[in-house]
Image (cartoon, rainbow, N blue to C red; front, side, top):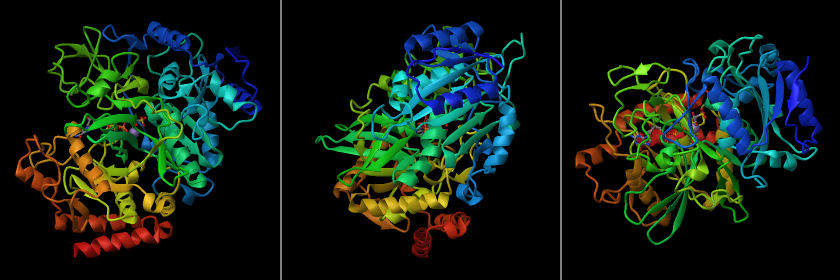
Length: 602
Ligand code: GTP
Ligand code: SPV
Ligand code: MN
């Protein structure tokens, strides 16, 4: 067995890292092992190679930007192929797929054997969180996909400095990734190599901080710093070490008097985090700055408050629906230096997607590589088409978004996408009630996962696909954090931007207008806005939501803030049933919340 080693840096002195790389190379049998240095020259060289092979299309209309088309079978996360592998099944819990570590490793080892034949194995040292920050953590991803390398350059902090910081014996998370498509000698590669669905495995050995991903090149399946590390593994570390790793955007709002509020919001995949993170408030005098759009790592600071950092360096955002009307800051972010995946290619050499807010091109090439015109029935861009762009390019990125100390969180927001039942906004009575709201959050499924779209399911804290341990223990961790935070705990709210009329139209305009709801939350923090107690929590008193200048009918407002007691009685029963599946591990305090809700509903 032999392979070339390229770009091995003098800075690697870590015997454990060198041994793992060698062992992985011997198993996967690549032609070349290439150590990534994170430089622009490296990015440019890899991208040029992918343009030459036909995997990437340079975009004439956007400087240094490229379009990729995935295999039609490999377009999103694969929750049914995602595993939490622990010695005891109960430690993964009923919300996760589980296979015993020995068995899963045996299966995957056979898949990895020779899986990189004919390819280069890239070694990517990366940091989640600003390098040197006390909250940052190091990972090393091994992958046979140059597309993954370029995306990791944008989404994380890649470079030799990471290896230097690691030293001879620093801790790192090993993350092994293969697209699972070895090449026989002389075999022509395809633009998007991957393995069939039944061979895909996204595996987390949480008891040894190890990630093994096989068979997919897309998003969270392949960019292992993101969901695999920063959420699934990090949630386990966070519980052990007394902090939080959450599927949350981080936003700073400043009111007209100059007072700052920091908001962290958890919505399920494709339910509005990136949009809210980049909000342009429509109410005069309010300003917003972005800190993160997908993941928050939070710990209690010396003053007893909860501080949040964004561990990522870029945005991997949903393209469809992104326009200068809905999210102008995202549109400005993706003007250059951006990777697009599964969008339409226009004849002018730009990208296009449904809901982009510009005229539909008369002709283009769709995400499957076929000619596309407006009368084709299927969408031109895949519903989970994405952009990968540096966070630093966002015009409203906060100047201190990389502050290692993080920002103090005042407000937690939970929510979901739900056509009925859940009002526009509800405030929790207290921490335990807020944790109950998070634990019972429900949302319609989206194209961010392979599977049915539009099915209502419980997605607690927007972590159903991302919690790396028993969900009931995770609920307890939230209760414990609240106990430690005491009166410094953030206030908790629940929102639903996605209510629909009976004929299927949005009841609430959403996007920048969501600032009206955020303003009410800030005023609740200050104690200056009135609310009425209902069975499900506090709702805005009539007249306390600032709706000035908004053309919203009184009927629509009434419907948005209505608590339909009959619907909620059924809802409460379903919540109890959901929590019941966790059996003995379910915290007593949440069972009390469920009983109290039922009692209030009568
Ligand atoms: P992930 O990256 O998958 O975690 O998604 P996300 O939570 O960041 O969702 P994103 O902000 O990308 O929004 C997903 C879709 O919801 C896009 O098509 C948006 O246009 C749409 N959307 C976001 N906010 C709103 C809103 O306030 N109202 C409505 N009607 N749609 C919204
Ligand atoms: C999500 O699905 O929540 C995402 C996209 O943010 S992915 O990185 O593919 O998980
Ligand atoms: Mn997400």
